[in-house]
Image (cartoon, rainbow, N blue to C red):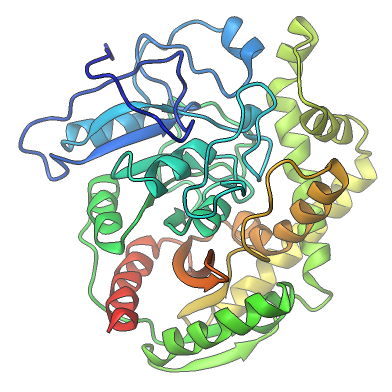
Length: 400
């Protein structure tokens, strides 16, 4: 059973103060000596998985087992020191929780950390732990990684078992983690995947022109030269437009299909409990309730088109390079109308990996006016280790 050991000094409001979960890592394991935290959607034996909503926590029992990923990391020697804040039931991308507050982004003071894996990203960025677990359904690892200046992977869908986590939408849910450097990322990956991280480069890098057009111009000016440097480390490079009809259409279909699944996962509980939700989360569930069969079927057709198109892009191998987010972390406490616009724009970039189930790794290689802006590499299904290995090579090359 998890237990409290040493009081955790949390100056960033990253950790759940009402859940003192502690698991000592196995001595001698490959991750021995590293500390980690877990987003409060991962089961830890003896503790209620709160999911960022007080009514969810009040109506659920303590977990009987550790989540697969938590147990795997502890068995590998890493010590878990606590659970971190999340957007309500993972239904957010900025990291602001109306019930528990907003973790502090130490890399961008006065700005959001990104969500929904907000506390985990804040804890790693602030040096409270060596790495931290998050989940990524619609961008909840990639966006915080970009906003907080971290490495963050959305793995190949289905690559990591989801046993023992609070699910949002099974067709999109994945488990990822954050680190401050690529070497640590690789160490954790080897423990999770059970494979060595290779030291090689892709046959080519495809720069996604339309993805770079989605971001603020000053962000593009920062990241495009980085993309060119990354491409120079590969066998060859080319520029491609991914979406024939624009990325807005691609994002819209995932919003519809993911929202439908997310509602299905909680509707029985909502009908029984009538829980408290923030305005924004309520609005997202209300959207799902009012979806028509026509909207859902049309979105499913577009989803298939997106998958077919990305199959074409990856037919000749290599990685796709794209911005992780449209800009640096937004200011905390923006009005709802501004948040809606930002979330919509972010989804134009995050929907590609989510819809196709391909792995995408955000690298902290850009900076705009002192604020982090991430750049991503996306690989074909199952190329997670190769992505991380290339990221290690990129980190070394760009540091020299």
